[in-house]
Image (cartoon, rainbow, N blue to C red; front, side, top):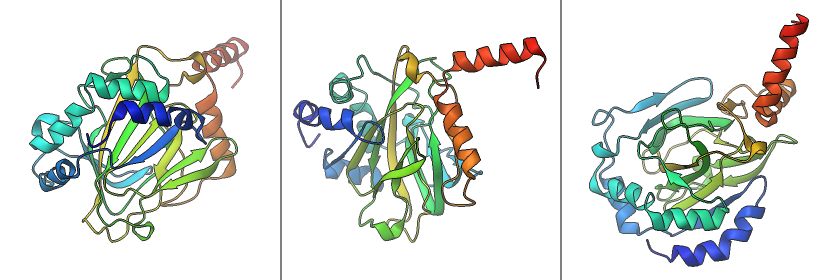
Length: 266
């Protein structure tokens, strides 16, 4: 690491926890640039690893791979470093979420690449790791894009759930790390399509962190996506329905379904 993480956590923790529209922080220059450039130099070709292609109503032009054993030594080093105890302690102090656990499988994480024209619409992430059963609590994104500007699109957007609107736009420039809570109201994405990427594509290192259980008010299962760009806009009704589903605890939904079944309503 190029900086002292313990000092950063103490300095930035209050700003992280009070950030709007949900807890988050943007930090530049944390990692050694030579190491990140090494990740770019070793970036797997399209046919070198079994990329998972995402091309549906929520996202276009995106490829992901979490098979760390297939990556070069620089990518393996970064992903290993951000899974070690010192980094977990930094995250816990920064976020206020204790006993964070990394995912050794890097499920739905690892290396991300979005090609020209690609986008990811505004959504709330899944909250349960299907393999481990742990609750996802925190996301870390590390961008690898030299010479990237607003004109290249692909900005990470953070949206407020009520009212449903964009609150922050973050350009994915090289050696920029974004950390944010994973919760039902943490709507985010990069709905503006990537345009003429100076480095060929929008590249990201991604990792998720978990706990055993989560506060009741944050219980939520599945992922919610809403169209905010990159295609047809969602209706106001669809936005409210998605937000309502996101913030309603599962026990309330289950009780409502039970009552409906008892009364024969449809």
